[in-house]
Image 1 (spheres, rainbow, N blue to C red):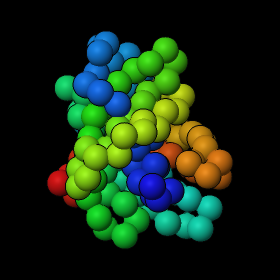
Image 2: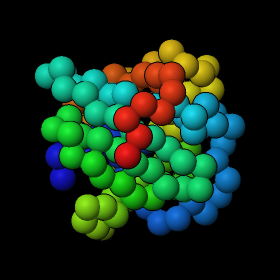
Image 3: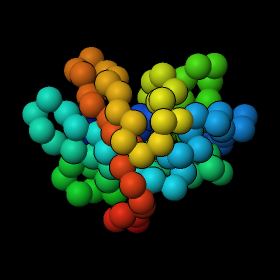
Image 4: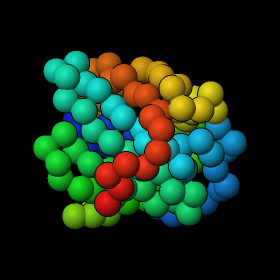
Length: 124
């Protein structure tokens, strides 16, 4: 699983079992852009129904399902192929709305900078 896939998965498990916390609601109408230490970027679109779409740095589209587990959001890739391991990270602080920015760790432990950007541009 590539680091770009994981970023897309940030934020990348079975269907959402619990309602989305209010902190995620701004993400449903905007885009989470992730920037890796090497400058590559990915895009993530969370949907309130527990699905997500993502675009890797190489342009490949992926998608799957997300759910809240405690204080974390976990994602499982379903497209273009199923990845049976969920990627979990702290629930992103998107409640601040567009412009909210935070750092989290990627799959390999590298720091990844995430920013909530306006709109759903390039949504698959």
